[in-house]
Length: 357
Image 1 (cartoon, rainbow, N blue to C red):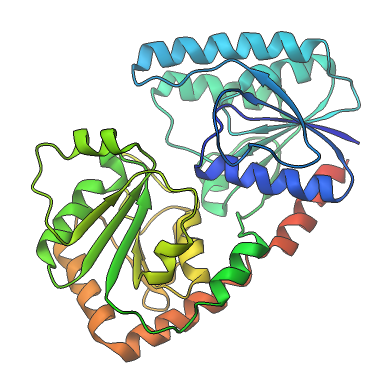
Image 2 (cartoon, rainbow, N blue to C red; image 1 turned 180 degrees about the vertical axis):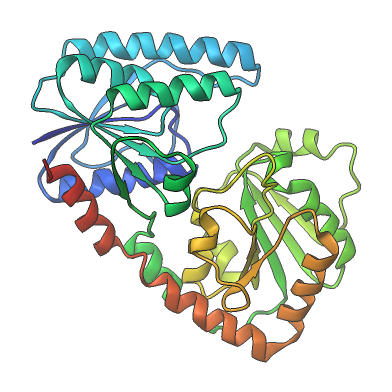
C-alpha cells in the first residue's frame, strides 16, 4: 500500500497536528507514505521521519480575494504534480476539504480517495458549496472528527468517525503533573487571534475577575497581538502570548481552560485544546454545541455555556476556583474521560479505515 497524504497549510494548528499523528502511525506500520503540502513554513508536518516530502506553492494572506486566488492557483499546481505520480493502487488521503485539486486528479486516476473533514464553518458559502461538492464527487469515503460534524455535514458516502487523540508522549508528560498544588489560580485559553474565537470575551472576563490570572496563548506574532489590542485596556492580570511550539508549561500551571468560540460564527467540530486540558485533569468551560459536547459533560468535567453569557461564565469560574471539593471532582472526571482518546485507539482505527475495501 502507498498512501499519498495532502494538506494545504503547514502550521501549528489542529488539522496538521492530526495528520502528523496519522503519518507517524502509518510509517510505524511500514506503510510507504508521501506528503504533499506547501513549502517554506514550519509546523506540525515538518521533518516527520520516514515520510517522503513533496512541496507545492501556497501563500496565506489576509486579503480574502487574494487568498482565494492563491488557493485555486495552488490547487492547479498540485493537480499537475499529482497527475504524473499517482497510480491507481494509491490511497489518496486529503486532510481538510481545502486541497480539492488532489481529490479531482485522484478521482480521474481511479484511486481510493479518503477525505478527513475537520471543519464546517467555511466562508463564503459559495466556496463551501464548491469544496463539499468536490468531496461528494471525488471521495470514496470520508472521515469525520466527531459525530456532531458527521451529522452537520452529511454526505452520501461511506463515513467514519475518528476522534482526535493525544500523542502518548503528551499523555505521559501530563500524567506527571496531575494533582499538583497550583501556586496561583490561572485561567487559560489557547486559540487563534480572532474575535469569533472569543478573544474579546476572554478580555472581559479578566477585567471582571482581577483575583485570577488569565493567560491567552494565540496562534499569532507579537506584532499581531499588539495591533489587535491597541485600542483595548488590557488589565495587569491578563498575559498575552504569541505562537508557542510547547504548550505543556501553560497546562501545567493552569487551573481551568476556556473555549469561548462564538457559535453563531464558528462551531468547534472537536476541540483538541479541551482534550489536552482534560489529560492534565483541568476542568473546562466550552460552548453548548459542536464536537466539544462529546468531550465535556455538564457539571462533571466542566460547563457548557454560550460565550456571550459573560456574567454566568464568571460565576462558574468563581465556583470552580473557590470550591476545592467541586474542583477536585471535575478534575478527576476530566482525566478519566481523556483516557478513551488514546493513541492506540487512533492507530488501530486509522489503519482499519485505510485497509478496508
